[in-house]
Image (cartoon, rainbow, N blue to C red):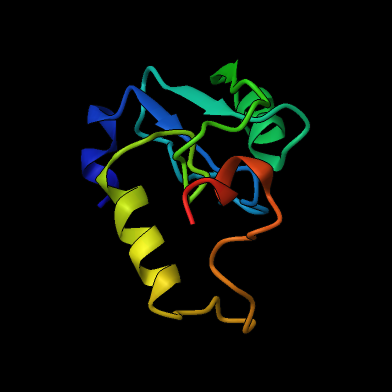
Length: 105
């Protein structure tokens, strides 16, 4: 797979990512890492000389899976939540106490 990484110019890394292998993006000549301030992804970007763009800390209304993008994946995620699917730890997919998401549910 690493043979095709040179095609990637920008990536969004969710705030809950806690490890990225040092050579994960070694074939990316020009890469911008979009992530939240204070996360492992920010540290990774800076330590590996990738451009870092901070994702605004505000939560996007409608971003059910909280990946920073509103698209059809959020609809699917919401449908899975409504059908009762749980995270691997048994918790709900969507925290219904999150004010930005309760309007969706």
